[in-house]
Length: 327
Image (cartoon, rainbow, N blue to C red; front, side, top):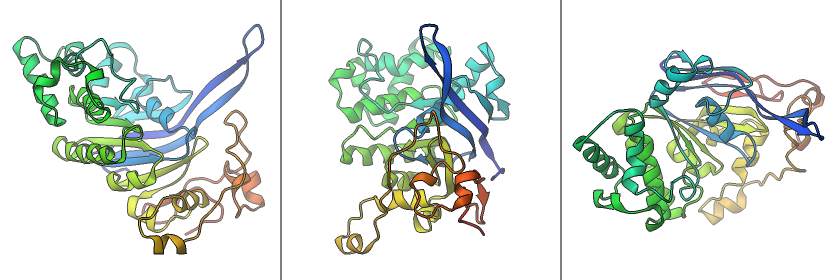
């Protein structure tokens, strides 16, 4: 795939979770949450990662950050192979990569003040001491459009949007280069979602940040992402530039997802074709042979049932994993 100015390079990433059964808790199978995924993220860009719930988006993000010990594959970040690092070298590398959690209610310690939550990474990494600590905390709160005087409040005294701003400030405290945004707006009201998206876009420009933006709402992803990867049952189905994906979706799964996105114009909405998928998402414990999507695809042919399609470049940095799509 694209190799110029790459910050994060994910190669053949697999993340399997063992299934245990019986009195002896013996292994009887694997949940193949992420199954041979390859992509990269350039410095300063936002890659959107979309798909249905349970397709492996969050697991991918956490595996990149080495919050899970990956089953196979490589994660290369700033030229270092993260999956080979342990102990102090990995801890030092974590300064450059952070995570914004999905739930602003559960991700903040209710016993800590806002100032302590935002400032804790500074103390953990030994970045500041004494008077400079309070100044840094105040600056971080201002960066996410919160008043420094709010630093003495506890999480329950903030609204949902304000709590997510605290989570963003905490992630920014160590001045990272790369942030995994794990559905950061899905638990918020629509009006607040727009504010958080604008904030993230502004911070990206000001601090030259790189994002992996995980979401299931394709309309949100379009506004913030430079490129978008579509995931289904642990596999990347399609990846290309944001406008290209929305204007020219080629994989049948991508087309089905986009057909469900609401359109403000009733006239346009009535004319477009709805694509209804049959059946349910197969179990990641026993995914289908061949293309994982073929049991639900109306365009499937015999090759789809027997041979797994590779992620092929059809031109213009547009990659598709489908036997029915060619250059």
